[in-house]
Image 1 (cartoon, rainbow, N blue to C red):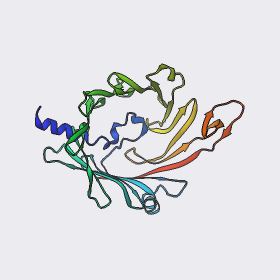
Image 2 (image 1 turned 60 degrees about the vertical axis):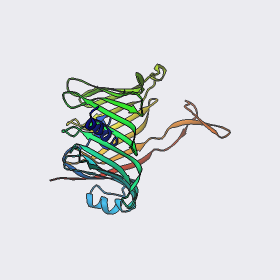
Image 3 (image 1 turned 45 degrees about the horizontal axis):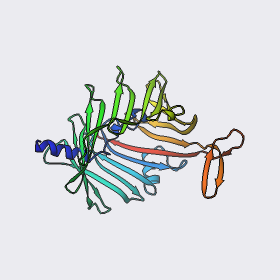
Image 4 (image 1 turned 90 degrees about the vertical axis):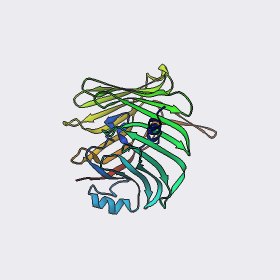
Length: 309
């Protein structure tokens, strides 16, 4: 095997978590548009923070747990950190390698920005910024490799996985319609063995995502999600159902000029249920006659996005 190709593969495997663009469902508004340079994200309760960027930084980032992402001029994520009161909880950085401008080496750092342990990764990109291959390593040993394939429209159609010395197998598959919209997603946990998947059905104002599973008996009451669209086709509300009852409601309150959300509300709905106490075991059962209601929990997720001019 060509040594440069092997290095490319190793480099690609290490950055599995770098980009948001590989979410199996693009309707969840996690793909960033525009020349993004810097992103802060923070979860808050109530009206602790305002939508204004300066107030978000002053009133939230100083005292809240938050996540910070930094991108280079090509839109490649080069730093991801989680902080609490500005103390480092997790920090990973990626730097370009000498072998290619499309290959990055990633390591985890401690609070003093020193390399932490010997687990690292390499990731290789296509010239258009999509991921081509990833290699996750411990020292010089390859742990996991990921490889990605795209169609003529640069949409992801297949994700292949190799674990250790095992053979590569298809772990994710994507299908699109003639308009380039995702119509089906499938996930496999071993060769030729389906784990679960989703189908997507589109109208002008609502998209329905329905889940399906390897075992047919689970499909009669499978979860589903409704995505409500604005006149521009942007998802502005999301309802996630489980057993016919809303589990989670997401409302996108604000978008910026590039169409990226900056403020969203998450409502985790309470459940009607009967709780039976059996020793130390709690058994929750739905019942039409006797119910205990748990109130919904509301939180907000805010993003401050800085762009390259």
